[in-house]
Image (cartoon, rainbow over all chains, first blue to last red; front, top):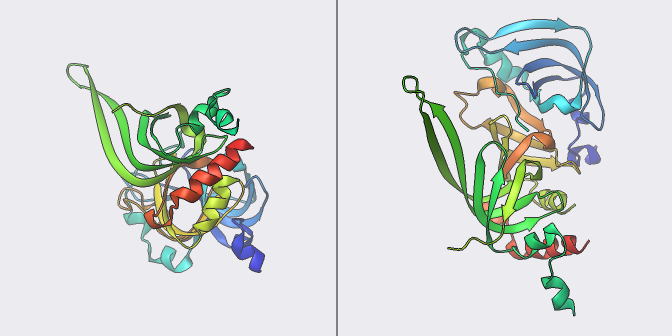
Length: 102
Length: 96
Length: 92
């Protein structure tokens, strides 16, 4: 446990809902089932949140298990359920995130 | 002898070592430039710069005349870690 | 190793990480690994009105490869230590 707190790994996030920002600017929400050293992720029960400056956030169900390759991952966020429930996704207007420019 | 070693430039990174604690110019990907004092670097050209001025250059095309309008945006940052993979070139001490 | 060691000394301090997708995230540095992946706690996205994409995220992991800059807290940069460590590292 003490080691977990010091390491920058994703161990503490396994079996919790996470919000992933990919290098092409997409936002995928799902349950983290596994990961490795290269930040490859196994995501369960995924959906994509599609942002638009014209309409609210569209939630697209991706379903099942997905492996997301680490090279394409920018940020892995711990989704806080309380904060998430306070959001009114249909009211949020925002352009999609830009792609990562290496 | 040791002093002589410290001052010779045999490979590119030696030039950067001689720039430690000097103000340098760094050109980065994405039309970004930095000017700041070099406090640390490693073999990847990760760096820590102090009293940094960042310049971002953007080009806009005028809707009517199709002229290129070049805009520069500047900001100051006290201390900045710069990831080496974005670095295009470093130039040793700026003559001021 | 120089920057890995240096970032470990910043654990608990507030930093702003600027990413290569122009997102800037401020938070308390929780941990760092050899790839310079970082974990931040109590994050706040700079310009949240433009970037509401992480509003329900309090803690996050940022992949080192997507970092452009990290703005460092002025009080925690010891220039002498950095110079010495850099010269040691340059010698190999």
